[in-house]
Image 1: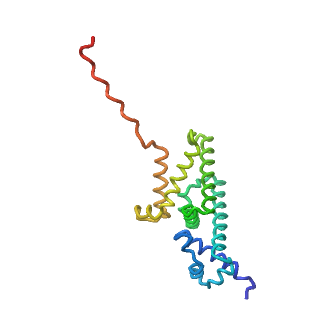
Image 2: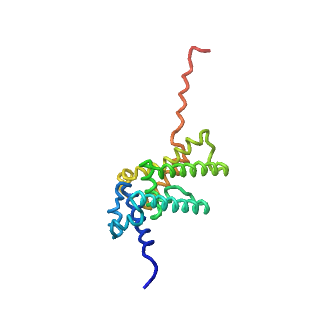
Image 3: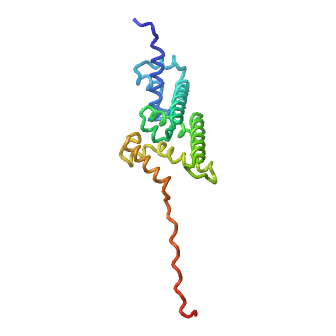
Length: 208
């Protein structure tokens, strides 16, 4: 018989179950009872591990923040695009990103921390690409970075409506491909065409 304690594994399963509930339904849905039922344990055991629902949510925040930071760092080190599209295409990362989106929507401390982090990543990333000549510089880099961040973040925050229109999950690889293709087209090809030049006035026949 193994002498290893099952408690750490149970704690991890509880945190993961709570993360998935929050990602899909919000913090209010992640009750102690529902999390316990999802793992197949008693509600008192959840309280034994975390003390309260607030303690459980804090553990979820810590797990998500640590894991996402690690993923973004690995992508950056590999020179890969850390865009939301690529994260949504990864099953594990998608759940974490949806969790972050819930935090942003509910405007809690985790959401504010993540928005600041994502804004910094966007602005720094655009500055680095500008230095390499990949993009032009902006007269207002703060607003430009916020708009670029909002483009991707908006789809995640509006996920139910987006999926209803597309009739497919935002995490579906075919949808991710469409997302990447359309965004690249929008960002590399001007949307608006210059106004047509006004027609030249007809020559005045009375003029010499």
